[in-house]
Amino acid sequence: MLLRMIIAGVARVTLLTAAIFPIIAPPGAACADADVLATVDGAPAVTWDDVYFYYRDAAGTAPQAEITAKEVADTVDTLVTAEVILREAEEKGYADEESLQKGFAGYRRKLLREMLGEALARETTVAEEEVRSAYEKDTDRRTCSVVVAKTRDEARAAYDELISGRPWEDVKRKYCFTEKSGESGTYGNFALPFDGTAVASVVYNTPVGKYGPPVTLPFDVRWYIYRVEGTVPGRRDTYEEGRDEIEKALVTAETLARMEQLVEAQRPTRIITRNAEVWKDLQALPVEAFVEKWGKEDVTVSEVEGVPVNGEDFVGGILDYFSVDVDTLEAYRDDDPADFAYVAERLLKRLEDYVILELEARRRGIDEDPEFAHRYKKYRAGILMDFFSNKEFKAKLPDITDADVERYYEVHKEEFAIYEHAEVYLLVASGRDDVEALHGQIARADDPVGTAASHAAARAAVTGSLSATDTGQEEFYGVVKVMREPRVAEGEDPFAPELRVRVFPFAGVNQVSEVFQTADGRWALYITLRYEPSRQQTLEDPGVEFECSRRAWADYYGSDEVDELSRRWLASLREKHKLEFAREKFEEVAARLNASK
Image (cartoon, rainbow, N blue to C red):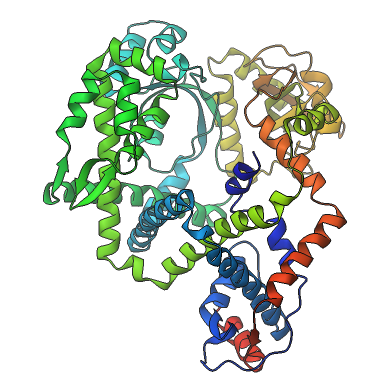
């Protein structure tokens, strides 16, 4: 459990990392190279690039004030301590751990694809009229439910049955494979802002209560059929306020499309060799025997230009896709072998597509880019530092046991309760007659929320941007979250306390309230969009056991005593090595960093 928690938390600031910061670097001799700011045992340890990327990453999350030489000194010291830990880990052979090596190799390949996508995004431009058009179309959004089908043919069959009048629940039970495997067959209600993707295009052209035709996404294997449940208001910001966000979404969608087009264009030119024996065994062998034979890293199921796709990724992809045990997977295959082979084919094609993208990234020299080296080093360091600290320090402390987790849950059970809550679409105005007239229109409408949203969009054109948090305006339209328990009302809208006594007891989705007067003398009505009853989550609910483990660990290892032990351990590592700092360069580095913002 402990190791899983550590490896899963690479991106977070760890206990180890937090303990590095208070250590102040001792005086040291100057470093020779102009861009080397610190050495460990005479070898370069921290360079200008290291410090530059450190501050640039920080600037991505929060505005940076003027950087001082002292801040540079503290940063260099932090990076030196990390370097000492990494060297200690490598000396002890932890970097050669097979599980870590596999993770490092997988991340390098993933990083190549990510940075290729970023390069394509930089090459992608969106015309101003496209951004304007997207803004104007985003006057309302759709809430949807979805059936997830394994194949295009199943998706088409499900769609035809829906169009012919077969009930949604019946079709979901028959075709939605996530429903069969114990997952939810619908994703509930969610908003799809206009962003140019295939799904958004389908949903926005589907009337409320109707079904969109089957659609898939770039590099996805599944097929989706959406039922549009209703509408909610879209953008309430001005074009100038929302322009950058919309442009970014359009560029992202266009970049995904370009990556897919790149793969399809290159596939015919690439030498792709598949292991024919895999496909024979896929049909002939029992699934358990197939997994045992082909689900290994050193087994090649396909090659693209000599770059192998290993069996572990392929077979693991199949198991992850179906999210079932081996026996249930056997039943899937026996039920429809051709369908099973179709899914395997698409999964293998996706893995081959990834290789094509990686080859293209290398062709562009992305793996030689200092940015690539920095991001890979940062990831590897995070993993290795956590692994090393677990082996050398944390493993010597008492582990968090199942009993600790259960004890934490029992003491903090109320924190894992889901209290009765609802989301309502609220309309507030100063004139009673206007609200009562609107109430009549909405109550008679087939789509109450859509009617209200259309009215809100028309009024917004007159009154300007309507904010969900500024209740001092003459008019307000928007979605408000209302919770039964006031003490867990964080994130609620200011209108929620007034609505709480009206919304509960719950009357039903799409129910339109009577017109009522608010505490400040205005008039209002609401439509209930969504409702969730109260329930107590148990340790078996997704994520609860892990969260209890994480919190129990944090409670125990947040003690002053353990913090002091950690500092002593880090100090002992530093004392083993000769550390030198080029302090005379720190003023210049601070100036360079400030100039590079």
